[in-house]
Image 1 (tube, one colour):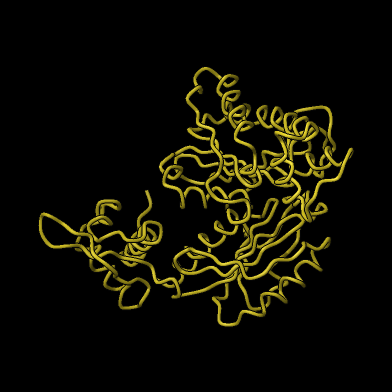
Image 2: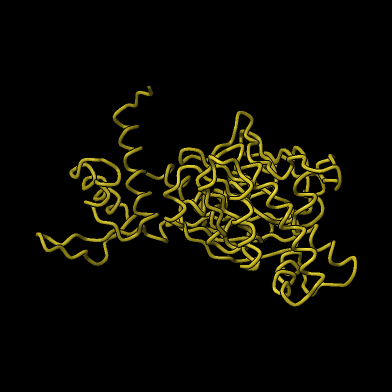
Length: 379
């Protein structure tokens, strides 16, 4: 059992109150007390301290038939700003993260082939935004080391390995996190329907397949900070993978694989893999080749989902990223076949599409993480 000093306990309680307001804007003091278990007088004291610092503010009331109306509380969006990045395999997005956890896209660029060129471009873009908090959170398509400063291995980024990212940013603290973990965090915090579940598997469908695993309400990273590399389950004897093995799940069912299979016979319109995969999904009902490719994709996706459900027994599997483009008729097959094939004890598992778009889900996660990290430094 951990023992905290009075100062540490106060900081922890203040962060609990602040995050409750951040993720449930419009709550009242009484609601915070009920949700956190903190004494109402403690909540009032912490709220007043953060109001004086202008971290939060009151706006509007919650009417009551029993007595005094309660004032609604909100996080001050502009209390701090920071840079966040969704570093994609082929395309990357830069955003400004606000103190309430929201984010605005400010720039996009095609991801260069080498880390040196990539971070040269990124540092040049970041320098255009003076006055931001000296922290940059970057979502990456690969595993990161325990310091969260080094990109340990990113197979789909030309096998980048052991990249010390912080050395490229002279005035920023750098924090790296796996993109699927960030997407899982975003869905859990932004969608109460998902956030109320304790055990979740989030599948990020992109140029590869990533996984975010939530166990008992907490993101599971494993002993070596590399849990969730579900795309590298060996499932078949075909399909060379960028990781160096043959038969990985993502080598047979990523959006890149789908697009390549289709374009062996005819081209797809679109400038990026994302756009081409979205087109492929849109023409599914009318194009026999699209149907053939996506039906194969669906079967392989189901195989992997069933494996994950049998291993982890989650309440819900969320298919996100470019997976949100899948036609409803295809997704209905994924849901029904998963339930048919899983272990009898797991028949009640839910399989649902992500609620956040392919473009926003990882960036939302970086912004949420950034705002929470900044809060720890400022409260």
